[in-house]
Image (cartoon, rainbow, N blue to C red; front, top):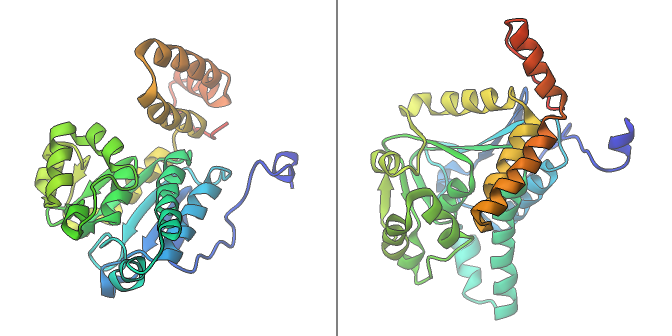
Length: 279
């Protein structure tokens, strides 16, 4: 083991076998599959926690450069399982309810803190917490039959769930986010593309291939620099313009010290395509 691995700053996902969702590594792309197709891939207490732990761990993993998040069986995710989450929540005391809502929020925090860009592949039902997972991803590919619904109001809850009131307006705008969060209505694929919630719209049979190819393209890029871009996109939400410009000056100066930056220059001079290694 190399010194930096031994010191605990890096981990490997070799042999990683989660119990509550599927995991496959295709080169530098990690594929997370929400795999309960008979119920449209709902989340459980256990899958929330295990997903949170995976994305936290990815902050220390170099071998994965991008993530694809998708659901099995033609649907993305139907949200929290009615029988395994919603029912039990109605019988919990306030401290336990708060522990649960903080845990779900920690999943979103972990997704945003992981250095790997996340591509969500959205088909069919994408509702409740499933819509949040799509929102918390960096990029979204969908189909015309996808139906995204932040349906919390329809079950007697506020739309301010897992960061939705902070993040969704930044993706689709304040007025459109208000529409979705107050009504809980479904956002179809074509409308989602027009609103900017989806980055790309493809045929259902092309969805997985498109998402994986996009993630592979990102993973083949300068990994350290991509991680810096993701960090800056997140951190600059709370900065003024002057602070953001200074933060980006520092971030870019750090990236100029990487070998990938030098590789890109040398490849340009040699009229070749650079091969990035993330260092």
